[in-house]
Each structure stands twice: as structure tokens, then as C-alpha cells.
Length: 377
Ligand SMILES: [Zn+2]
Image 1 (cartoon, rainbow, N blue to C red):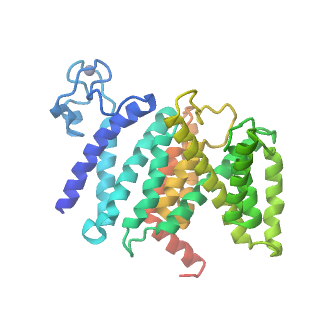
Image 2: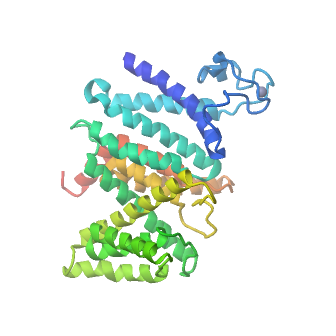
Image 3: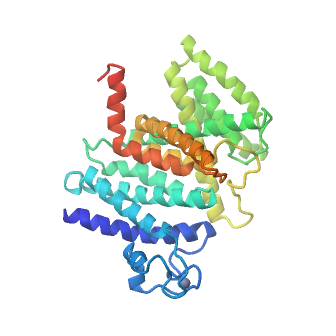
């Protein structure tokens, strides 16, 4: 009981800090300095004004100095964070699961921040998504058996399959939007060409074949100092016969071909993302920005990395539930927003986060129900 009260208070404090991160991270400003201040008059907040939720209520949602309105979003984020921390502690009590709660709390906080930044700026920053994948995969080492959480291998599989599914939606959706013309994206030494090759190689020979083919293409780029590329429409028209080849039983089984293609695609997409993120962070010069993408795409690549985060904490089975719920809720949200006359584009990231959290808490229920339908439980 005391631990729940403690986690609720901790959650609201983390929520208060999250508000700062949500506000400042997209502007590449320090999250530590300067101290929190009113966004309108820059009045510096006193310790009492920093008390989560209550300060907003006591001050009637207005700045104490300039009396301008302070958005309801601030206490809302603090409340969501507190509620999430308590729910996670109820589902995975510390007494029973020990340190397993820690990575879950960290990832939950990061997911809430990502969703809010995506709503504000339509971006999912690499500095949040990539570390969250890392925490999600390594966090499995703290999980106890019987927690219903994935082990290391399941988390890795979930991460690459999750990324792979969203990459393929992105590429195939992009091809349709471009009326099957080739992409203009060119990145050296590792970029979309390698991701596409991984999809094809994985479909022909399974996961390792896909990864090997993409790495071989990267090596060729490095050795030739050129960007060797195959046109995207060609690769994706070869993908169908490659998958059909698996039904003949000559090379790999159909399931190996599908999971191999998705997994290799996701693995190379994450590897490429990590490379470009490290390069942009460590090497000074013209910054490469994946988000400034001139071409019409079905989903941004930030969603690819977010799907990998969800795959890492859910494992691939519950990840499929999460993706299904996200698309369903996203479609409903889109329809409702149209009916209410809302024209503002709503990014997909928040729906992914919501679907992922539903699958985290209720995934076992959905799985048992589904297996029951199939007569397998
Ligand atoms: Zn003010």
C-alpha cells in the first residue's frame, strides 16, 4: 500500500519533469537549465508552484504572476504518469516481481513523452525511441518467470518484427502514393536500399540471409565509395515471388520466409537508425534529419522505432494485438475527428502508444480469448 502511494507521488513528479522534456527536447534546449518558468511572462516557479497537479488546481490553472492561463495539459500529463505508475505496480507488484518494475516505469514515462511530442511536432525523436528500445530489450534481464513479460530472445524478436511490419507499411504505402515511381532517398553507406534488400533476402532465405545481404550491400557501398542501388519498385515486385517460392519448400518454410523478411527489415532499419543517430550526435557538420522527408510516406520512420520499443516490451504475439488495436483506434479516431469537423492531422504515434499499453495490460486476456476462438486453449 505504501509502495503504491510512493509510486503515485513519484509518477506525478516524473510527470512534472516530463512536461519540461516535452516542451524543450524538440527545441534541442537543455532539460535541466534554466529552472521551470511561466511560458508567458517567464516568472520563475517557486517550489510550491512546482507541486504536481495541486499547484495547478490551487492557482485555478493560471500563472500566479501574469494570470495567463496555464494549459490543462500540464496537470493531465502529471496525472497520467501517476496513474500509469500505480497501475504498473498493481500489475507487477515489487514484492513479487522485484526490479522488473523499473524498466517498465522508465519505458512508460518515455512512451507518454513520445506521444505528447508527436502530437505537438509530428516527430518521435531518436534520442527517445532508440534508448527506449535498448531499455526494453535489456530490461528483460530483470523480469522474473511468471511475469507474463518477454525474455531476451522474445524481446529482440518483437523489436525487429515490430519495426519490420511498420517499415513494410511505410515502403509499400510510399510506393502506392508515389504511383510506383522509385524513391529519391539516398543514404550512404546504409539506408533504404539496404532495408529493402533485407526484406527481399529475408523472404528468400530467412532472417540471417536478409541481414547478411543488407550488410554485404553496405560493405559494397563502403568499398566502392558509391551508393549502389536497386530501384525500389523492382525490389518490392520481387518480394511476392520470393514469398511464393517458400510454399514450394525448396528453400525455407513460409513462416520462416515471412518472419525472416520482417525481422531482417526491422533489424537493418534499427541498425541504420542507430548509425545515423550516432553520426549526427557525434560528428559535427551538416546534420542529417530523417524527419525532413519530402516524399509522401504512409507512416514516418519514427513510428518504425516506436513499434520496435513496443515489440521489445510485448514480444511479437502481443505486439500484433497492439498494432491491431492501434489501427482500429486510429481509424475510429480519424473518423470521429472528421465528423466533428477537425481538419488537423493527427499523428499515428499516440495511437501506437495507446494500443501498446492496452496490449501490455490486457494482452493475455486478448490472447486467451483468441486462442479460445481457435479451440487451442
Ligand atoms: Zn506568467
